[in-house]
Length: 416
Ligand code: FAD
Image (cartoon, rainbow, N blue to C red; front, side, top):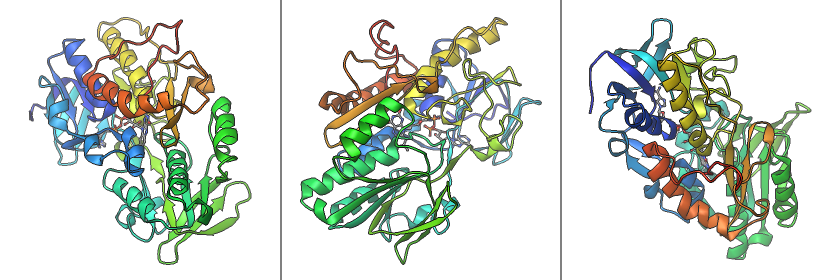
C-alpha cells in the first residue's frame, strides 16, 4: 500500500533484511499502527545465497521475492528512494521531493556498491572480458557462466578494503571455483589467486588458521594480502593492484576475474548529521541507538557498529533495536545490548562449510557442540537448506525463528 501521509510515528528506511523484519516487529510486537517503510525496490533479495548461485548450485530466481509480499500489510509502503535526512527537523526527503516527518526513525538502508571506484570497472562491464561478480543479482549468473566456460589459465578473486558486506563472500567463490576446476579435470592448468586488501585471510584467528592449513595450502590457492584492486583494463585482461604496504603498483594478467566492488555508506547517510566520521550511522554499538539523536536507531549494513556486516548480525540486532525502541518510546532506560554477533558460513568446496561465528573483538562464539573450524557436510546442509528458511520464515517476518538455543548450549545466536 502506498500513502501520501506526510508524518508517521515510526519511519523505517529500507525494506531489506533489516528493514522488512523491523517493520513486522514494530507492527506486531509494539502494536504500532502508524508505520511507514520507505523502500524504492519492488524486489527483495536473499543475498547470502548468491555465493551458491555463482557456483551453479542454486537458481538465482529463488533468491528474489516481491517486496509487497514481505512487508506487513499494516505498514505504509512509500515506494521512493530517500535523498536526505534532517534529524533536527525529524524529516526525511525522498528523491522526488516528498517530505515525510517522523517521531522515531529506523535507518536500515544497507550499503552502496561503488563499482566505479575501480578505474575501468562498472556494473555494466561485468559479464564481459572475463569479469564477473557475485555481488549483485544482475551479475551473479555471469560467475557461473564464466566458471563453466573456463578451460584453464589464471583466475583472480579480489576483495576491497573493509568494511564490506559478508567479508567471507569474496573468498568463498575462490574456493568453489578451485573445487569446480578440480572436478572438471582442469585444475593442473589453472592458477587460482586470491588478492585482498586485508592483512590476512580472515579476521578471527581460529578460522584464519583453519583456512590456511586446511584449504589454502593443501589446495595450492595463492594469496596476496594488502593488495587492493585499483584499476582494470578489460581489453588487455589486466588487473592493477596497489600494494597497501609498499605503495607499489602490481599488474596481474587474468583469464577470468571475480571482482568484489568497493563499498561505502549510502549517500544520504554519509551527507547527513547522522553519519560518523566514516559515513555510517553513528550508533552506540551495544544499544544501536544514535549517539546524538535519541529518536533514531540503525541496524544492518548501514550501521556504524564495528561488527561484521551480515544478515546473521541483523538477526541479533533486530530484537535489541525493537526492545530499546519500546523502552525509549516509554521514556525508560535502554537495557537490551547487541554483543557484536556475526557469522560466516565459509563454503570451502562443493558440499563443505566451515561455520565461523564470533562476537565483537573476534571472540569465537559457536552454536554447535563440535569444532566448527573443520569443513563439514552438516554445516553445508545448514547453509544450503536451513538458513534460507531461517531468513524467509524468521528474519524478514520479524520472528526469532527457530527459537535461539539456550546460552549454555551454544552461542545463543543463529547464523545466516
Ligand atoms: P539490504 O538487505 O541490502 O537491504 C537494504 C535495503 O535498503 C534495500 O532493499 C534497498 O533497496 C534499500 N535502500 C537502499 N538505499 C535506499 C534509499 N536511499 N532509500 C530507501 N531505501 C533504500 N550475510 C550472512 O549473514 N551470511 C552470508 O553467507 C552472506 N553472504 C553474502 C553473500 C553475498 C554475495 C552478499 C552480497 C551478501 C552476503 N551477506 C551474507 C550479507 C547480507 O546479505 C547483508 O549483510 C544483509 O542483506 C544486510 O541487510 P540490510 O537490510 O542492512 O541491507
